[in-house]
Image: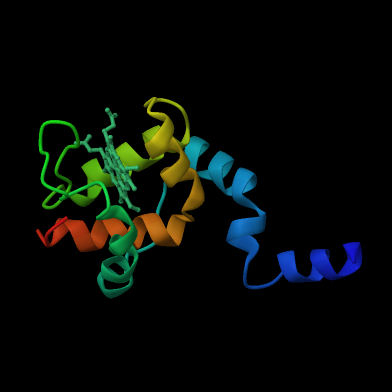
Length: 112
Ligand code: HEC
């Protein structure tokens, strides 16, 4: 079984299996790939349960954030420079490609 797990982790799900390593890389060298806004639109569904749920006081709007601000916020949560348990969990569950895609999507001004 251990052998199989290693093979799986070396393949397509490397981002999930290598979460800690990916986090370290983004923390020391926060360079993101070009984002795919369409992929970001798809991923954004998981953000809507909180963002855009109608209480702007408790949860900040994220639609229309610049790509830079958005990426800085997510990397901040991921690396512990911003502390919020919920968002730290969200940011650590995403790979660089996912963060870049979400940054591209929300920068279009699309709704939360
Ligand atoms: C469980 C509820 C919840 C979910 C799900 C959630 N967020 Fe958040 N998010 C929050 C809260 C609460 C804050 C404010 C945290 C703070 O005070 O730092 C926040 C803050 C943020 C910020 C910083 C905004 C700013 O103006 O500084 C960004 C960017 C963000 N979230 C993006 C996302 C994205 C992208 C997703 C989906 C992948 C997501 N969030 C999912 C609750 C959530």
